[in-house]
Length: 518
Ligand code: TNX
Image (cartoon, rainbow, N blue to C red; front, side, top):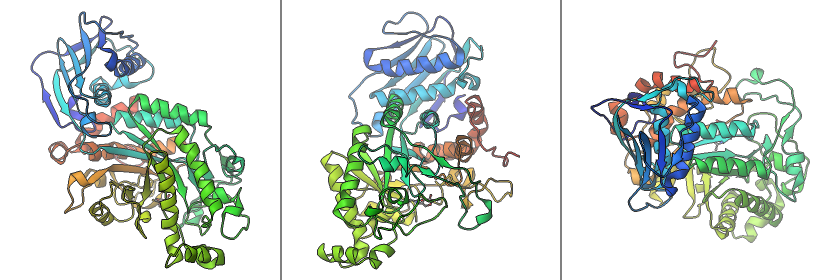
């Protein structure tokens, strides 16, 4: 249904003339360069319709044609994701100048199909018809992400793959994996076995809320981690959909899961445990060569697995108490010529950035890395206060807009007492639908993109993550892709009802817009 696409394309025009019918005679015609998108489409069609539509490089009869033409735009630009999609009685044509654009066209085509064909078991509704339409499309922002927090609660690999495909359906292009936090370490690192042996488990799961300690989860042990092979599989699955998996290693704060196994990397040397509760903890890395060595080893492992040009180094919520109380940390600050121990975080960030630059990668950090100065090419993920976005952009940083006001999908959806336990205030679909991601006085060019956050303190299992994510993530995809004009002409709230049929077919446990499921 072309009236209810999410995100809303730049231009959608109904075409006079009859629909295209997809049946046993249909062929996917793609040259070699376009074959990757052709096979992806082939797989989607087979799963939902039961039709095996062959991919061929020769046109004969009713066809879905995929073509790459024109000068190839640079990777990572909005132009690389632009495409055209035309449907008439004679056929379907998907065209783009870059394979990424073709892949977005395939996802839009998926949404033009009858919703029930998005099932992963054929429903037998063939032949399938597609209404005649012409679509021309290009994203507003180059970075359109969703962050999965697999640290607070480990999520199985299969679920990560599922979320990647759901991200692809919404033409998102980044899935950030928050792999480490106080409550768990999820990445196997050679030579550092205690990160996974100790750091990936906690004996109990009493996730008390900072504001209401009575509503936590029960006392069962929780844990898990990904092997390098798991992560390579995740990366490859995403790459096939032109999605970049961005790993986040959160340093130098949020490290209780590190210090549980390696207390010598901390400031007190005292033993600690993997955290079981929500919160900001005082334990942070000590400003030592040993801590830098540790970080370098972790980043070396990370760059070996993840081809992403950007590596997220975290950097949020790093209390300075331990540094202030530690004579060794104070001496180190003095030795480095820093006027205050507060600047030690900036020293860590600089070191991480230099090391990763040696691997040809750029860092991303949460906006706290601006305090005390961040390297010029650091990308800033603005979360605390939207006004920081304009300041960071003015300093020349690439800015990812990820503010608590509109992109935190771990927040409550409404004040209804039936909502599941969540964090702080309410972010409804309407809040997101009205969100304009470019701060006043800043231009589109200065904003790299938009990202949704799924912090998982209260999202213990995949069904809970889906319930928090959808349909709010659909609305964020609209903010990140669609032009303000397109969003005004056809608000996302009006397109949701039809879109929810797609999510139904995919078996997504979304929260009904009318209110929480009983
Ligand atoms: C703040 S956002 C955090 C996370 C929490 C989240 C809960 C950010 C960079 N840090 O550690 O999970 O709030 O909403």
